[in-house]
Image (tube, rainbow, N blue to C red; front, side, top):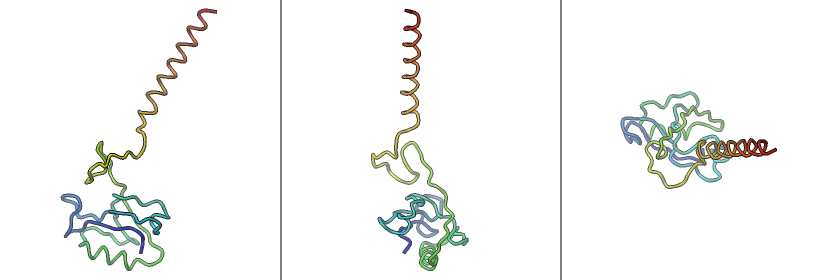
Length: 124
């Protein structure tokens, strides 16, 4: 297999009012995992140029099974909200530090360094 599971379709909507096909799980040491580009929560728009719009789940599964050895996927990266990926509950884990968590302390240190430098120069 390709090393990932999918959810969604016209008969099994994963997200309300969306018939799309989504990556639900990437299997450890599978092809998708080893490639590293596909992520859980990504929406798969096409397989080998074949649009997945308005397919039933089982028809999408069949397309993946018959995709062949070299597979081309057109995907849409999952959307991130403040509480995590769309359609998922947060699990308390962070994907990393937000940019502000790095910039604000860095800016504060820079301001403090300039202030100390100016105070030091005034005393000389």
